Structure formats: structure tokens, C-alpha cells
Image 1 (cartoon, helix red, strand yellow):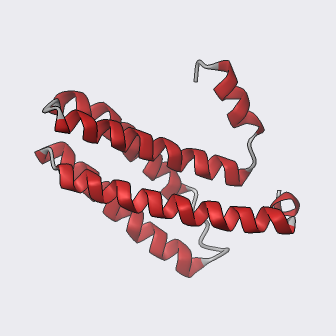
Image 2 (tube, rainbow, N blue to C red):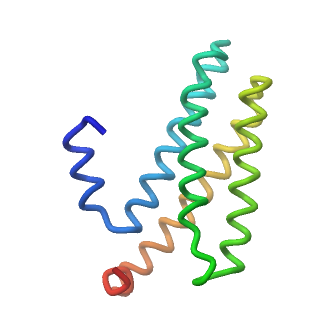
Image 3 (cartoon, one colour):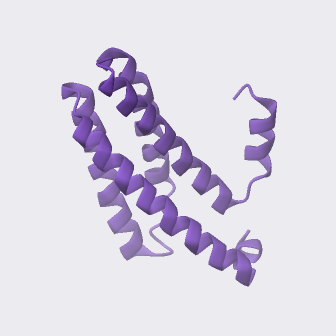
Length: 129
């Protein structure tokens, strides 16, 4: 993390903001990889796919089954599916795989943003700190 502004943003973000930043990164890297595949640059697309995979793995590692076991189980399965789709795209250059990943990541990010907004308006996020 060499950009001091970004580093400051990450260091001062609350948990909800960090979660959304992770989704933003995964979406951005997935879109970069998809663009490179569309340009027939399969080798160059591997790096952003790897970054997207790493972020999804981090999202998976953040799951806390003690708080919402059913939700965590569902997210776990979804994250495994996303990882499988990206790995398949890495092996065969599947644009459809990355389109699927992008759609799911955007839906998840939207849902989390709405939930975080509701929680922050109620003050729960600050108290949960």
C-alpha cells in the first residue's frame, strides 16, 4: 500500500467501510481481468484474477459463524463458488465465468452497503466497535 491517502483511508475506516472497500477491490480486479480477456490478453489477466481471488479469500476468512451461522454458511458456499469460477477462468479464459463473478460481487456489495447504511443510521455500528 504505497499511496499515503489510501493507507490513511484504510487505517481510519470502520469495519463496514473496510468490507465495502474489499468488495470494491474484488469488483475492480475482476473487471480488469475481464477487460484483458476481451482483449485476448489471457496471461496479463491472471494477475488481476489472482488479486480478486485473494480478496474473496479474505472475505471468506472474515466470516464469524458465532454471530450468524446460517448467513456465514451461505456466504461461505458463495465465496467458494466465486473462487471456483475465477479459477476456471484462469484455466480456460472463461469470460462468462468472470461476468458471473462480477454480477454476484456487485449484488453482495449492494446488499452490504444497504445493511451498513441502516446499521450506521441506528448507531449500532459505532457501538459494536
